[in-house]
Image (cartoon, rainbow, N blue to C red; front, side, top):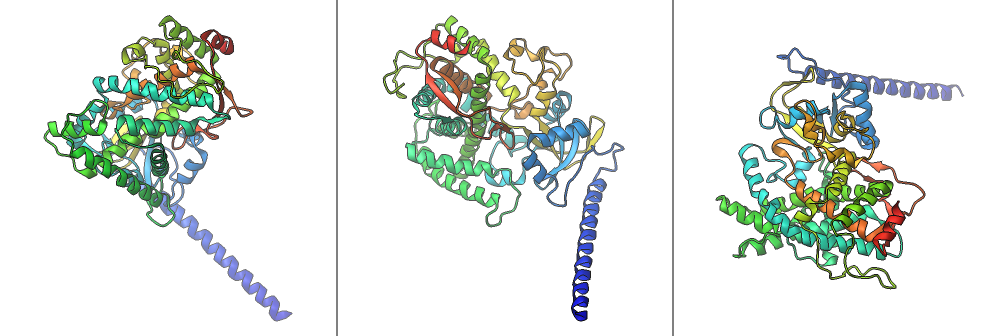
Length: 518
């Protein structure tokens, strides 16, 4: 017994010593991690670093950010203010919100800051993208892509987009069970971007396969920069390579075409626009440009479309006002087709009746779209890197640190609106935000960013949402297929956690629509 007791004491002593050493090592590592970032401040500046926490060694606060979602930023904003420091995805980050602060960042492009995305995004999207370009390459690529979103191109897109959206809404109405709107919106957005924007010839099966592949790429865009088996980055690289393989075949065909670019084909427009500027794009550049266009449209447009459906369902008064506006413009009927015993036929064959000019007359629809993007912006913000140490709101932003400006926080804290920012009120956009006092008025509303890197496709995105709103309101009524409205996930893209499951029913007449929603 005695030797056995000594053995137990020895084991306990060894375990206690090991635990103590491990605890001391963790404390020492944490202390050195914190000290490292305190010493990283620019000593030529008398200003302090922003308040905040750098989290755990190497991981920083990445795990907290992924788990907590939007509450991560809101809780730290309440604790530290509109400018605070953290450590995300392997880099020190200064989180910035508020119109004045965001204005300084967005207008400081090439002077105070340059575009910067997480390392994982840079690896997956490539080096020949507009997102990663700076200086003259950025100016040239933006000029090339501008033709893709020109007025002429948009006029060509709108009828084809309306046909695709009308077909989708009618298919929702014909579904035998509930529709998972977010999943349906992602599939729809990819089809529209691939077929209408890029001009890819894809059948339904191949289109669905590529959509799933692309979704895997985007889902791993904001992952830890570790290219190891089973990591998010490795999954994203595999998806990117598969996507590039298919795009290479389509691009090879277009490079051998001698015809003048048609307005509706972005790949042709990019190729011809670059040639006119004296630049012959490589296949790799074209593949990365195509993926970038898909990325810009895929999750963001699907997110905004889902939010539009959700917020209209929650606000039937807005539906009634849209119906009144459509009636005033003679647009209350979706088409001349009638529903049969099996419901609406998706491929009705009716001619599109909407154009940019018609959409421009639908002022309340425009206000609804803007309010959806204000209340539920698809992305939370944008990344920049400080080119030099500068002051912001009384703090120093050290050279080389990442800066993330927050779209969502800025919208939530804006004090220029006539009604509370947390409520859904399209009427707030009946007067221009530029009339707000001070030089930062237009930076209270930034769903598409601003400055030199404002979204080139914002008019196209708004047109898609306006078309969807019109087709929805004059074609269908919809209701929850679940007991309650779903919670919203905000990282990395805003969407309902359950995909927003709804029942859609075809309208028999505009009059019945008013009865249903009033």
